[in-house]
Image (tube, rainbow, N blue to C red; front, side, top):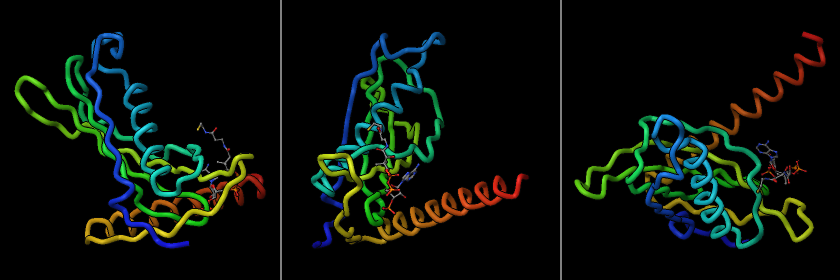
Amino acid sequence: MEARPVRDTQAALIRWMSIIDANSAGFVHGGIVMKLCDEAAGIAAVKHCRTRIVTAAIDRMTFRYPVHVGELLACRASVNAVWRTSMEVGVRVEAENPRTGEVRHTSTAYLTMVAVDDEGRPTEVPPLLTESPDEGRRMREAELRRNNRLAEREQIRAGRAAGT
Ligand SMILES: CC(C)(COP(=O)(O)OP(=O)(O)OC[C@H]1O[C@@H](n2cnc3c(N)ncnc32)[C@H](O)[C@@H]1OP(=O)(O)O)[C@@H](O)C(=O)NCCC(=O)NCCS
């Protein structure tokens, strides 16, 4: 399979936050932000592999600042790294006050998406081509997160097998 560049995976979803997106404190509900991140990540992943994809995991999600009703929420996603059938997609979330133009970086998320065939079986994804130092850094950091995840899973398995 031919490698595809990171730039071809870029996806953006922008939504105007309304009262139905709010939680009981009056801020935008974190679940709304997560859903939009999942959608943006899905678009980035499908643009890379051009097959069906599923979300295997939301590996990390930070909430740095609250988002307010009336703000524009932008989720920008691109594929950071690919393995055999899975991909890590990074999503940067920004909230913009449309009256003042002030923009805040409110969340970052990393999701693992898996390419599947029509029967839902994992299927191989094309290699990913990085073209800038930032893209190279994101790929290295994605490898580190994956290695940490796998090491953690192994330690938990070993601990359970040992009855600790
Ligand atoms: C994701 C899914 C396809 C993996 O199937 P599976 O039978 O475990 O397949 P495999 O063990 O061969 O794993 C396939 C890939 O998924 C990755 N994977 C599986 N579970 C994972 C998890 N919890 N976290 C991160 N990656 C995971 C594996 O590392 C592997 O990656 P690689 O091929 O790049 O090395 C399957 O668990 C599934 O369909 N889950 C439900 C997905 C879903 O409904 N999502 C919500 C709506 S889209």
